[in-house]
Image 1 (tube, one colour):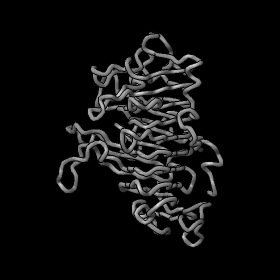
Image 2 (image 1 turned 135 degrees about the vertical axis):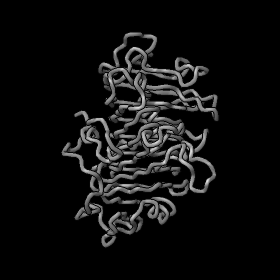
Image 3 (image 1 turned 135 degrees about the horizontal axis):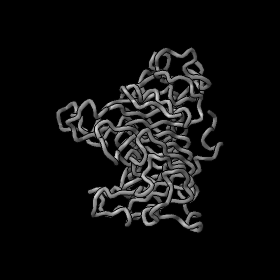
Image 4 (image 1 turned 45 degrees about the vertical axis):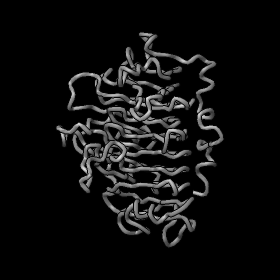
Length: 381
């Protein structure tokens, strides 16, 4: 199913393509939070029947412990808290500091379209205190610094739109910035335009491991970016139409900034890339070598993934800065399919050998952390 081009800000809350991407029923899209759900916390208990002493319930309609996610995060000091989020739209920014380790957020309905955490800061948005603009990191709707964070069936969104401020240059608008080690997202959606999903680390020396399973990510410019060691398994990446441009390229799916010392960057396995845009209007990736780390050697491996016609098959990679050509970075592919994976200019499509591919697996990237084990991530819930 191909959703229509977005015509209003509300597209973030009702992306038709996401249901198919996550194996969900593709009924007519409904804006999250339109009416209170009769059992807001589903099978996960309630404040009157709390699953564990460290389970908190959040409901915008007032039937939980808190009506906002941030207020629940503030109350959940220390390690190992679970937040059960009732269906609704949570319009707020949320920050999880490094001390709040081992947190789990669960969308109670099991459908990520029902639980939406969304705000509309961009890099160029002025800070309320007048001390300048937010910048890219400060634009994030949700920021997670803690290790051991897990989310299931939640939508993380940033609905700032370029069309609202065509004069702005700070158009980065992050849905979530994830910096902790052992961060896992199962059946989640990440919605935005530029810089949607910032898969990063707290500092250059931390090779933060992250795992995204059956997730849906959409955007246009560099919309999956950062220096984490991140595995994207069975995820759907969707590139959007841009009304402010009339020529290719519209943007880039991936912009890793892997530390030079890190042997593992981004791994995309058994996923797909689809597009609302005309054929060939998107590059698969470009390397981000930040001015704060000019020794970065961005790394991306895309394997056994269907690349739709939106990807420029002739030249799928481009430079962000000519001083750091993509050919000198660590970009590889292996056994991809679809029109966007056609190898027409071999020098532009570096491929792994079968022997090399054996080192590019979720097990190799994540080591002793196994979030893909069913018993590991379902637990008592």
